[in-house]
Image 1: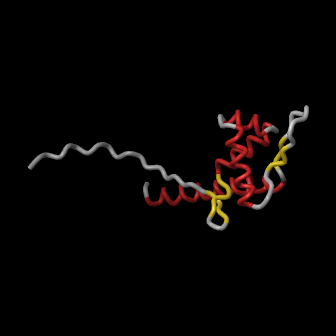
Image 2: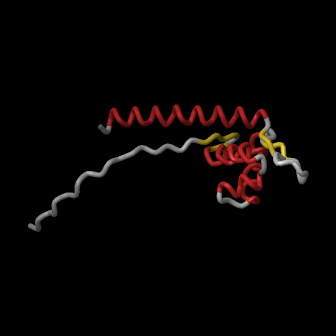
Image 3: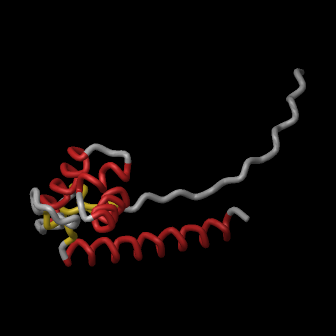
Length: 121
């Protein structure tokens, strides 16, 4: 009978969780979109936010518009052109949705870590 090779050292396991929101079975909001909205908020511009994230303007704009369609609410107040630095801003609904989503996501991740630690110590 052939000898079995010594098994390699067990590797560390880490839990991973993806959290997103759906409406009527359709993706509406998730972590990537929250990051995009935060970038728009910081930059005051969708174009600059996209550049800061290493994404195209078209991609960021399309994701925002898709989410607005799914949610039925405006997320970004965008003003085309103009000399001011801050041409795009988040709506109050976007600020609340982003903050609430990130808070719930953090709590879910912490709960998963705690449960994981109980079973995989």
